[in-house]
Image (cartoon, rainbow, N blue to C red; front, side, top):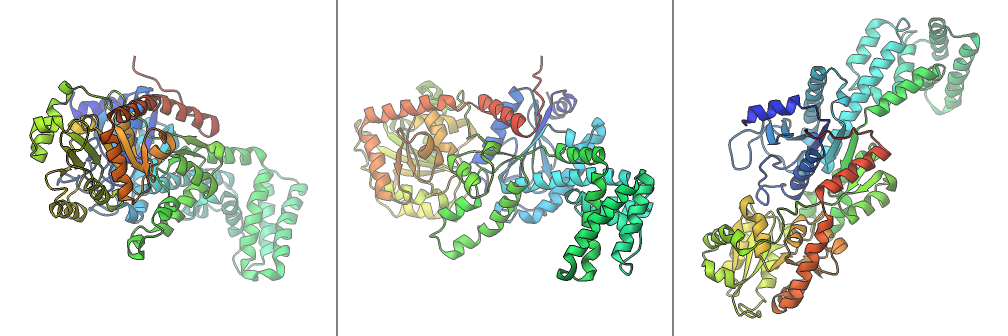
Length: 592
């Protein structure tokens, strides 16, 4: 089936639709994992979640930033991609035609939200429904996408409020004033202040700033009650309510502010006299909110991890800006998914998110892919490793292999892993073969250059430690299984997906105490070292290499523990939680 045929099949599908937004890095159907900047675990999480939703009977759109070239390619990220028959990628332009790192992505968000709003609007028009009914759920990932989700909901609220208020003031307020309100609804955030907007329209039709405020109120109330059929009691209620607000402000405000106070009191009071209209408006404004946020990481946590870093390295991470965005998203979102214990705790304690609105949803695994492989299944991977390292395949099979893979970023502390490995004897383990370290990840940058220098200038590392570059997808699962020990010395992780993948492969694990997966899920089975402590890492690696029985026992327990990390079961639980606490998501309809 061609790409065009798959896309048409997607568009004609009667499955309920769900939208995921992952806005930074190089998201797409083919992920350059451990190769491209800002691209890694989160993108893998989103794609895996989409596949689980597909299995449960949904069609999924993943929205990602586009308008710039794919990683290591001149092809623009603009045309839709099909991840599978029921999963499509749509690329959103905005922010220019170059890659933007996630710390700077705020400059693109307004343009992206505008494009996304119009795109979904066109889909709604084609489907004959309201835009907020196109997708059962809008699940955003990381703070930048969270901001987009909140702003999209706010735009839909503006549409609802402008529509309902225009109907309410028909024959009361001049048409041109109503048309201006509708046209400017997003700039004035009408959905945030429907009561004030109604009061302002009523007052604006009866005089201007030079007219006494209470006289304008009397005229507006008289017009409202005459058109709406109100009695003298209703007039009295409105006049007393507004008059009390204006008079109470009295000496505390300039008279110039009286019209604002009066409008803010008049609109809600007028709506209260039409309880059916008021209730419908409030219900409509709530129905449009189908947003659930999955932060993956939080600025407060990252700020804490970097608390002892020099200011020049902290400055580029823009912690203050990020925290402000995250707190706004938390205050305007009804449901959340926490991917680690630390994120759940931080949401509850520092971001004031209600516990009952949070679903614990750590990264899960495709255990059909990440599993122990036998020697025959790893033939091609041994050949790949021999070609990449220059070490003979027979020697590789006889060696004990220590493995790490992640993007080339200072926070991954690959330099510390090299320093620790330099303390490991070249062939001191129980089989007598060589002990080798292979490190995956890209892109080629100043971090990888520094690691090469570190290897070149160390007698203990030359010929024993190798940089593989980005590990091809065809070999990554087998590499986890091929390794004897997987090490992640990272000093900053939202979860630690590579560690969980190694565990599923039945590979012993050494981890820093900054990797939530190891600390919270397998603390008795992994060896956990203080971040930054090369001696502790060296000791842990040597312990596992020297004691094959201990290494195997730990590896087996890790593999067994990972059987509970199932994507489809986790996704079903997530949807059930959302239905119970926030959004009436329709059940999936798998193809017959």
